[in-house]
Image (cartoon, rainbow over all chains, first blue to last red; front, side, top):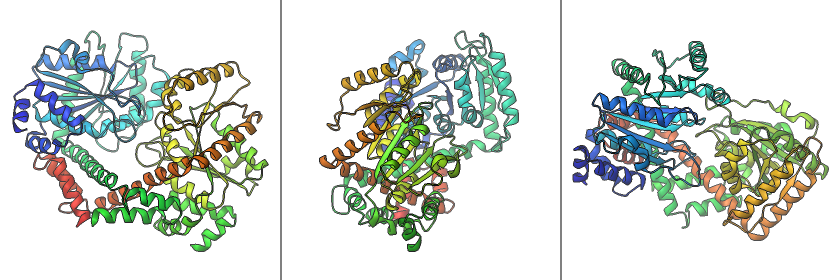
Length: 314
Length: 314
């Protein structure tokens, strides 16, 4: 295990992939892995990228990867696919996604299924981010399909959140507005060569100036790109670097990360409890027994919850 | 408190409303309320109603209420509004919703905000259902906007799940297909007077016959209604009664309810733990301290979760 961690930190892509697989499989050795990685975390700039289907998220992610690589920075990408609650499967394999970057050791791209509670991001995502961070990637991009609540979640995970828009998306943007205005640190209007791009940027600027951003003093910039050609992408990288610098100067970086770690630690603790409850579900005073007594009206759910907690406390 | 429960059971609508408010406010006396209600639960037929925006959910709910009332059955309705993660507010007040039934003591309608983890249904919903069940309503309808995962959730809550469709919804239906086919016990194609209603029913029948419904042997019927005029609604009530009878005969009713109670008990236990963790967050070995040590790389998240659990176990 320490060997695997060492090789990942030496830049061996296969070792990185193996570690992310351990995360995805919820391997029992994960504890050991995370303990070995812990001292090496905290360097990467974690950037969340979200937006409605069709705005060009994958193309934009690719263009960002290229721009960072031109500056010699190493980039890790986690693409989360919150498709079906039933399939749980990621649509694209690593190889397909790697595309242009398949022969570049400075890039690692990984699709992960959105598992766990209620779509959006699973609690394995922060752990995969942690692997890429510890493996020495300078930038970790987390790409999610922005559908309602997952924007809010990716904002909780990232140091910096990029919200992508595009002209001609109509209702999608309308529907997403409320959420979008609260989570973006940098806004990018993609497909800037199309009609209406300027209008989208203008509308967005008006909405942002109206909204109260009580949580901090950062004024989110709006950039326009044509991700397909790479036009405008260096300016996005610049804005991202500025936000990172701002986060560090104001102490907001640590506050965001503590909040993220809180949620992660809590999620692991709860998952651990659920596992223990499942393991003892069948026995007397197990979860099945307690639930059965609730159904029979012999016990109310609060009293049952108390008994459940008494099990772990005993 | 016992008096309030007695009055609710005597059919006093104001007492019922007061009990649901205690649930919604997460009142500290909730434990006491639930303990008093427990022996009286388990009689109501809990029916979930879901479907994409625009299929006519509220109109259908209203039509169902009317049909049940014509049979002399008492009906409680919980309308869950999973609008914004930020507002958390229900759109319509009780009075507005009551509409046609405002002067009918046999009907109680209540809008609840979708709170708690990630939109969809909050864990207060099952408790409100429990109140209406114990208050003696023969049927409890739970109406939710079907957007992605919340269909799955309402199916988890109800004895019987009704999935509503309508002609001319196009993409909405396409997107929802996967989820829809797994959760419906009874399908209703509303707006049957419009072009394409027959086609929607045909497509649905074809899809249902292809899909494998491994979880049980019930073959979900498809009914067509014009909820506005009430046409076809008695046939839906009939289908719902048949499903309820089937659930009882096969023992599926108890299995579903135990599963539901399991989730509810677990959610209460987890919420209780989170409260305790929040209360001690600021102190040494509190959640903030642990999260800070994770951010500093001094602790990995698993070890932090262990320490967190040690607090409740201590």
